[in-house]
Image 1 (spheres, rainbow, N blue to C red):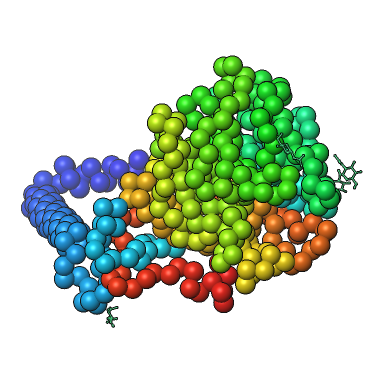
Image 2: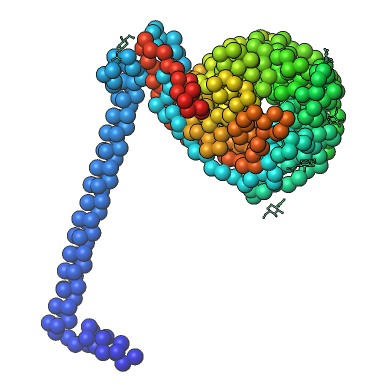
Length: 443
Ligand SMILES: *[C@@H]1O[C@H](CO)[C@@H](O)[C@H](O)[C@H]1NC(C)=O
Ligand SMILES: *[C@@H]1O[C@H](CO)[C@@H](O)[C@H](O)[C@H]1NC(C)=O
Ligand SMILES: *[C@@H]1O[C@H](CO)[C@@H](O)[C@H](O)[C@H]1NC(C)=O
Ligand SMILES: *[C@@H]1O[C@H](CO)[C@@H](O)[C@H](O)[C@H]1NC(C)=O
Ligand SMILES: *[C@@H]1O[C@H](CO)[C@@H](O)[C@H](O)[C@H]1NC(C)=O
């Protein structure tokens, strides 16, 4: 109180020069402060315009660069190397696709391990859940196990088992129902003579909204190691092996409305251990085992159009692979293919998983190699959820195991893709051989 009284006195009751000079000093200080603020604001505005100008300049440079890329002029001095964008450029005379400027992009991160090691299973994604169906455990026993992984809570729940143990089968999702089709009931595949006893013709359907299994019509003939995908209200089961491990080109189609199977036209290249996806209104089938003498695994991609009932040959994968995994990256109009089996020096006693992964961009008709997966694997499964791709289990390098099971994995990983400009490298008069390094360093 006392202090305040003294202050008041100083300003208002002490008439004379002292009070006025205090006031004018105050005013000067305010004016100076205003000037200072103006200068600061001016400086900020100046800096802002510099930043805007810089952004405009960079954008202009980028636009010019992209124009130059598209003109294919002046950017590279090497006579046999050319940049290009988009698929039409594939047809340019004398140019061979040399890969993407953004080869190797994307990130892999480990996720929660499976409750136990698992191979030859299937996996589908619905919303934030990834279902992991059947497979064989580390001792090679075929399982009726049915798991669901919550990609948000990061944990596994065991659901009611498949009515029958199952591995090396086809699985697909249609209208929130999971279809489990064909494949093998047990691992008695080496029993001579070949018989259909271990193969299954059953169709089991899991309703994810009810949490119940039901049985659909049997398939027309058994096929082990086929692949499955659903499109326009139908489920497709493609390729695989017969009881003698003969290659199949058969396509069986399930119509839930009539609970019946019928045949669609054979795929052009018979193969087992292939991968399929419903993509861009067609059933895409990729890679697989063909038993070819130079490379038993395939780089082929073919697609079936249900409207025209015709098959189309699509651009080859960069790397041959069988028994890997495929998932659709819906927002990118892209397919991601992961891992798969290779045979060291073409000797099938030495099976190894591939580290390499690649993405097919439908708009560009082009494959791009993505970041290598830390744990190479085959006989594996993948599913998309929320734009990410989850890979679980599979097997590791498997050297002449005889009747023993190949070493099963319990590890999982999730892939996050990154977007990049569509800039590709083309090589003139030089064959691009992506497999050249593979004999010494198997990817
Ligand atoms: C695999 O499953 C079989 C049958 O359920 C069981 O006997 C065996 O112990 C399991 N092996 C492992 C490694 O869990
Ligand atoms: C998954 O995690 C959630 C949240 O911690 C928990 O409530 C739920 O019981 C877990 N489920 C399993 C199968 O552990
Ligand atoms: C598979 O083989 C085991 C042992 O060799 C036999 O006990 C079992 O009955 C066979 N399963 C089938 C379905 O043939
Ligand atoms: C297995 O079943 C298919 C189709 O029913 C038949 O064509 C084939 O001969 C059978 N194979 C054997 C080894 O019994
Ligand atoms: C470009 O390709 C030609 C024809 O294959 C070859 O003779 C030449 O050496 C290549 N040039 C360079 C710089 O690699």
